[in-house]
Image 1 (cartoon, rainbow, N blue to C red):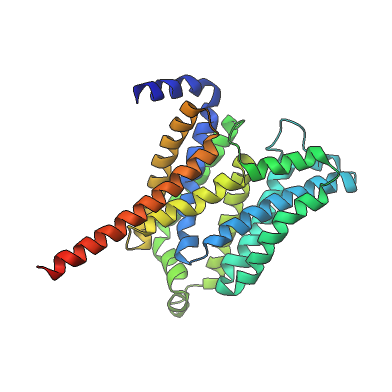
Image 2 (tube, one colour; image 1 turned 45 degrees about the vertical axis):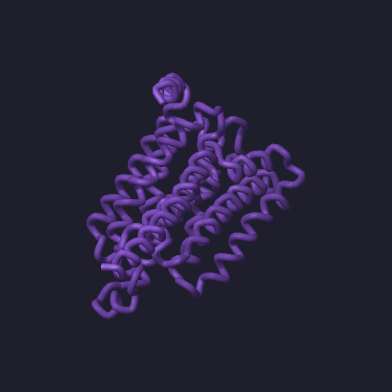
Length: 295
């Protein structure tokens, strides 16, 4: 174990910003993922991720089709401002279509997921460089993050945490019981739209920096793990980011030792923890039931 840590610390001078960005993205998205999971709309995260990547493809295509040079992305610049803006816009629209409309938005969510997956390949089929840029987003890569990314995601994680701390009760009511929330005077539509906007902006920023796989994994997997152990949404808000941070730290250390991509390793670790955690929870429940019968 000491050898793993020494190897990881040695790589810090080269990939420190990438590691920090990944951990902060995981913490920020795990908090928002609690809202999506609590509403049983985990698939929405995949649709938003696809829509964000598809929006980047549209921006790249428009840069050539309409001769708009400031939309073009240059080699070695995956975090181009136009790409990031396109990802945020696409993610926000997809979030509003799904999260703000609740179950009635399922058809829109499915449509966005499918279109977000096929449009990049169709629009950029004759533009290999731009297609490579979008494929990079789908594949997920944390390599190349800058200090600005670290500061941006640190601010994002803090803003989300403060927002949940201050408005925890209202958010829980809007997510879990919108009918009662409306009855007590809470503007459910406005709050749902605000939460959808927050989700879209966070996912758009994360996708532009880390890609769709890592972003979607950090959004839903920690929240699913937390839900199997926490009885309340407020408890999930605390457990999910803690789980995301601990697991991604371990995953990045192991990925560095094995010379594997950290984003994919983190998703694999989170998926394994979900399976093991859910199984342990069910086993514990069965043992408690048996013990209760024999007591």
